[in-house]
Each structure stands twice: as structure tokens, then as C-alpha cells.
Image 1: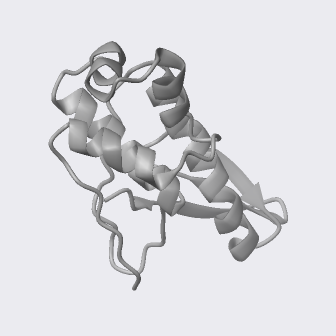
Image 2 (image 1 turned 45 degrees about the vertical axis):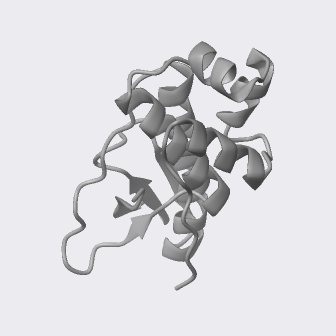
Length: 138
């Protein structure tokens, strides 16, 4: 769902990583493997800017054949999925807090990608939006 294609470009002895769909996410590494590891943090940081600004998340385009993709960690994907459902339904944080019986700081932490929220809290928020969380290992 949040697999974003990346462009790897050699740059003065390092490997530059950019995201066509998330221009704010830019990073580099000494080689492609390190650059792709750094890309996860860059992507999460950039997507958190969208959440903080209460903007819709950019949709990832389909990767071209052989093109690498990067996605946020599993917990962050769950948080982003709930955030995306909330924005698509036009629901504000205050309304989500009311539905959950939570205080606003709890909802704010739920959408903080650097905060280690509990999965049961993310599931509760998804249910309050009429959605559910699916986890798979592949």
C-alpha cells in the first residue's frame, strides 16, 4: 500500500536516493544497500510532514520493471493507513478522539511516526473509522 518507487543515482562516490512521489524525501548512502536503508527513515520523515500539515498522503505510482521500492516500517504503515482513512472520510482528529473516548494528546501520539504506539491502539482507531488492520508476512 505504501510502496514508493525510488530513483538511485550515483553522486560523487555516494548513492543518492529520491522519491518521485515524495519530493521531500531525499537521502544518500555509501552504496545502494546503505542508501536504501537510509531511505526508509527519509520516507517516514517526509510522510510525517504531510501528517503534521494535515495533508493527504501522496499516492505511490506503480514501480517500473526492476525499479526498487521503499516502504515505511510495519507500525508506521498501520498508522499511515489509519491517517489516510481518516482524511478520506473527512474526519478530524477531534472527532476521532471523541469516537475513541481519548484525549487529544493520545490521538496526536497515534499519528506521530516516531512514537512507538501499541498496535491495539491503532486497531481501535481503525475500527472507529469502520476499517481494520491486516498484517501479512511474505
